[in-house]
Image (cartoon, rainbow, N blue to C red):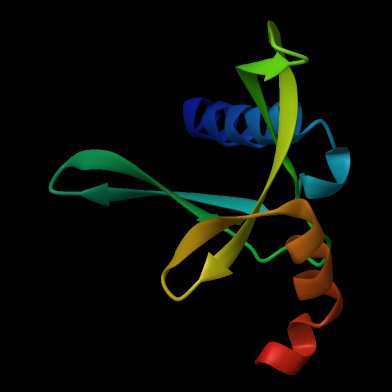
Amino acid sequence: STLRDNLRLEIKQTFIDYFEDERHFGLPYTEIIELEGKDLCCITIKKSPNPIFVKIKTTYKLDGKDKKGEIWKCYVRYDNGIREMKFDSFMDYWKNRDDQS
């Protein structure tokens, strides 16, 4: 239906807007199924072949002064979840990720 198609496109566009990179357009897969007479939207995110960095708006201190701005965070899959990783550690992890399987 048109409503379902619009929802799928909205989810993909939100994903692109958040990460500010159109290369990630194909990563989310949405499926709308009926369960107990109600529509249920299932979203599956495919593994990215490239690292994705998350931009977060925050308040931080710089030279003893409060600042507002955006910072980039690195996260990696860890068992059944995700964990934050420092940028330098992330770069080492990413370069050697095939050795860690």
